[in-house]
Length: 84
Image 1 (cartoon, rainbow, N blue to C red):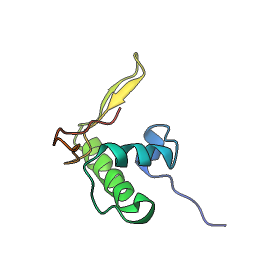
Image 2 (image 1 turned 120 degrees about the horizontal axis):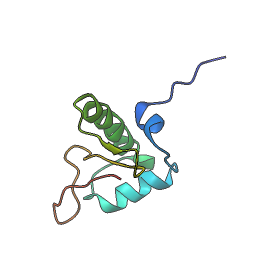
Image 3 (image 1 turned 90 degrees about the horizontal axis):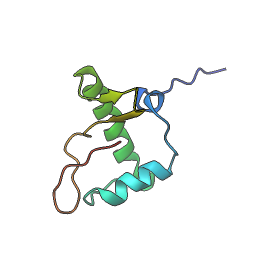
Image 4 (image 1 turned 120 degrees about the vertical axis):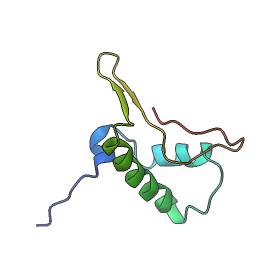
């Protein structure tokens, strides 16, 4: 039986898949994310690991909140996105 490894992004927090990915895709500036926004998902996974390694994922366990800036993703007015 194959072992399924959970990516760090999914271990970090609860994600209602695919709803959370669709929400990010709707807010972000339109890009060719491919079918089911697979490119966006891969981008977020890799960027999360980089941000976490660089201590750029901010966590407050007392308030049960965390946020990070997913790379260079912006909205349609070019404001940076932050995922909470």
